[in-house]
Length: 361
Image (tube, rainbow, N blue to C red; front, side, top):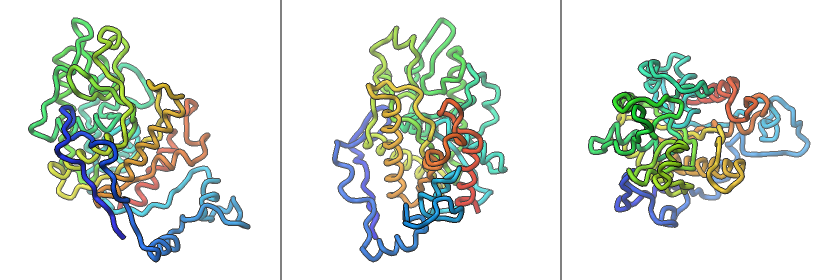
């Protein structure tokens, strides 16, 4: 078998994130995986979850291994072959969308050290009581994940202060933080920024890094020349209509960002860093495209799901974990709150049970 490892050209430069995506069509000239016919047949024979349906089998057989049988159960349990495993002594760091916080909390509850669950954040005041909680480290797109890692790890990367915008005489807006935080003065805004970078630096000591991808709709601060973490607030769009630019990010852009994340962690992270990439099942709250919100969400999750698999395929220390599939293929009534956005406790529990069973020794 053969696994290819195409890389992004270092000559492609974007001031806001470092290497930018190459021109369309230049990334993937070879398949990610190639097997001989014999190897392919062996894959099929040795994979207990390789078949969707078989005639004359009971769909409700609790021991059935076919997909249509497993999908009849309340909670879907995927067949997972982990590339690597962790010990309970390994330190974890979770970064990404709000779903990363659920994974983080579940690990911490099992006495696993999670460096991203910083006690320093307890003093910060949220602006609302959303189910996602404070989530100070929530990073919703690959640009914002990469930005935080660069500003914390790369000594040559400088946080663009001009991306912090005044709202009133006493409050400032940091578009790289979580929207649940209250707006505060400039000094406190910079103190939050310093705290975030202090906590993000702790990723260097973590052998296990969990990256959760959430959004493919992104916003760029044209004036500061940097992609931001969240949708600009309405008052800024009204007063500075030309400052922010909306984009539907491409596969190539997200691939380039993930490759840079990998390089940063290889350069500045743990000497034996292992990365779990997953896709948040939490759907878009709004879309700023012309698509139906359901269609826009399907597009975004499909893109992120595909790029995460590709990323895992070309790196031996990156593995894809199917949290998205667990939720999407389980009983909706058991998985989702009434808003069909937030995953219930049993859903998170199922995800963590599968994760711990496969990745923790």
